Image 1 (cartoon, one colour):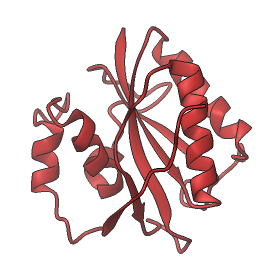
Image 2 (cartoon, rainbow, N blue to C red; image 1 turned 90 degrees about the horizontal axis):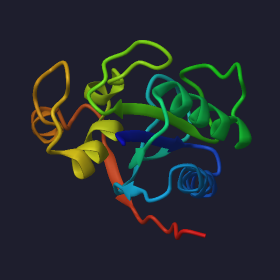
Image 3 (cartoon, rainbow, N blue to C red; image 1 turned 30 degrees about the vertical axis):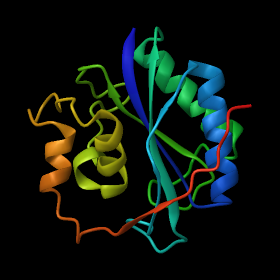
Length: 164
């Protein structure tokens, strides 16, 4: 069983699409380990604030099957196939980690954004802080401790999701 971590984000009807994303991930993978839910400003473009979190799951699915499942969930929740990287979105699901795999295709693993964005690193450190980044060699808790917290402001918000 592979241990994987997925970043969820939304800045359009945020609570609804975070709930939809969690429901779909629960249906696809089963038991979810959830970080806190955070509100953060849009990064890379002027847009409404995002809700972001990280989810951990265990799966027998291959890396390519996981990547395809995440894309399918995004499309089922209104994501456009030609959505720009820096744009508003109903649901954004990014595979951050797939065990200790290092890959560029079908997804960049470990995801580059882990060390660049507080809205990815803080929630990942919450639920997988003990794990070691496969290329940097430091734990996610260490990376969060060293992160410049003035770079991006995050605020924890209540997560009101309950499994169906």
